[in-house]
Amino acid sequence: MSHTWTLTVNRMRLATRTPVFLFFSVGMPLALLLGVCGFVARGRPYLVPYVLSSVLALTVMGSFWGLSMQLVTYREMGILRRFRLAPIGPGALLASSILSNYFLTLPTVIAQFLLARWLFHMPQWGNLLSAFVMVTLGTITFASLGLIVASVTNTAQETQMINQALWFLFLFLSGATIPLPTFPGWLQRVALYVPATYLVAGLERAMVGQESIFHLGANILSLAGCAAVALIISHQLFRWDPGSKAPRRAKLWAASTILPFVLLGLWETHYGGLRKNARADYQYMGHQSAPNAPPNSTPH
Amino acid sequence: MAAPIIQVENLTKRYDSVVALRGVSFEVNEGEVFGLLGPNGAGKTSTVEILEGLRAPDSGRASVCGLDPQRSSRRLKEAIGATLQATALPDKIKVGEALAMFSSFYPKRRNLGDLLRRFGLEEKRNAFYGQLSGGQKQRLALALALVNEPQVLFLDEPTAGLDPQVRREIYDVIEELKFERKTILITTHYIEEAERLCDRVAIVDQGLVIAQGTPRELKQRAAGTTRIDVRLARPEPDGALANLEGVADARQMDGAWVLHSSRVPATIVALVKYLESAGNELSGLEISAPSLEDVFLELTGRKLRD
Image (cartoon, rainbow over all chains, first blue to last red; front, side, top):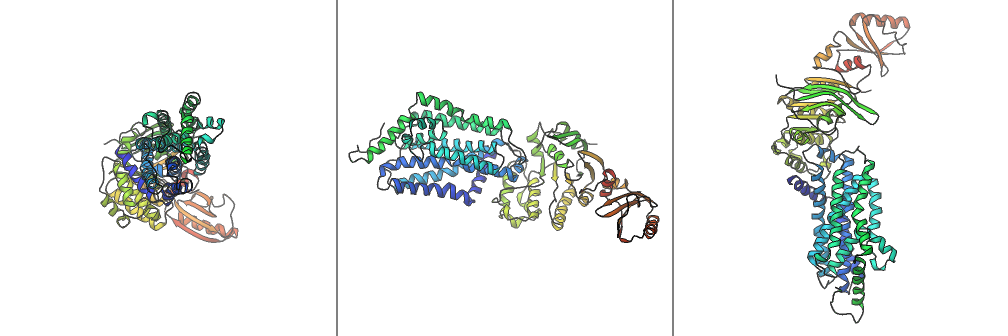
């Protein structure tokens, strides 16, 4: 454990010295909040929790991008090989990736909350415990997905291509940029198979519906399941050497990460309430903007 | 007599269709500096990486400090120190931080201030790795290999790609370690390095140890002969110089003839006479004592850096 902590502290230190990290992990998320809230929710504070939940989801989802690139670059440069000579295993390196990413994401998330409250007069904090749990699980899950991407790609260029494809999927199918209820029915059903949808929906429920964690069971379980599977697989497929190529079976293993979401998607399609809740939150925002809206009531 | 600290028996290793090791065997005693000398691709790095526990052999047996590198990987890593052919660290890590981080992974730790002083890195303690010169990076790699007071040190091509001045600096550092009776296994393709630093050398070629012994013993293989490098104004047919008096071996290399002669004066007289009769001229002549390069040449018919 102490090795993991040492690595975590060092990786955090290195990240804060990297302008790319500061731009993408601090500057961009804060600019996104200022831009979106300023554009959509200026003078309409009741919209801020809804907008904030999307911005938080995007901030958390960004984890997979940076981590996968960093791990692949470290492998390509031979940095992982040097670590391999020391008495530490892949578990310590992977855990430190997740932890350092989490501790570096948290201040940005807190700053987004504070800016939403103070600058855009967010009327309520949402359910902070639920939001915290969703942010924590989301960061771990998307970081783990990043580690999976790193384990099946051989070069930074390949990683970039896969990241871009995944990013667009997460961005436009999860409800983070375009509200889920505005999708046609068939696309809503497709979105139920996308991991990011459960993060966005969970954060919406926590921020708008102020739901407790006990009402976010499906979201929490799906993200936790995905994180666990992704961590186990990335540990199994971990490669230290720049020369070692991802075996064919690696791609099959990596594909199994989506298994929890296939099962959950099937369950949600037939029995779940995700789409209903998303619609309720969205309609609630619509009611709030109407002149005869009920004051400060939540939909559930 | 104590058992050798490194034992290697019939190691074989294949990468797809490439056979890297065909049955490498040697032993290294405690306190000895042992060199694996051979051209690129001879199998030196594969051997060392098997001993460091980084690769598994296809067959054969290896033991370092009494440990099987595959079965006791963690304990082995605590007992050894190593530099890779190309050590890389993140550009934004500081020298002092890198030493402190790697040192924290081991139960036995060396004083970091002493290491910084010893490797002339005291003033660079707060410098980023990316700002260091090639020589400083290599000195840091050596310092990192020593953070745990290792019983055995593996140095894989420690001076490859460095300029001659930096190379000499690294030699001084390794000689200090040798003076302390550290057990060191060093791979190199530099003759000078092997002759200067190693107590014993194994010459490796195409995945096999083709000769081993002290540099002196190895050079005695060619001791009966002296090397004569001959440059001619015009080319001579194959075999012409091989028939000169006293010549044991004649090969063409880099546009010159390399003769090994047991009777140098007679060979030179015969050479001059032959050139006169053939209407050719001598444009260069160099006589030198045999080196490990000559031993390699004699054994393989090739130069070390072919």
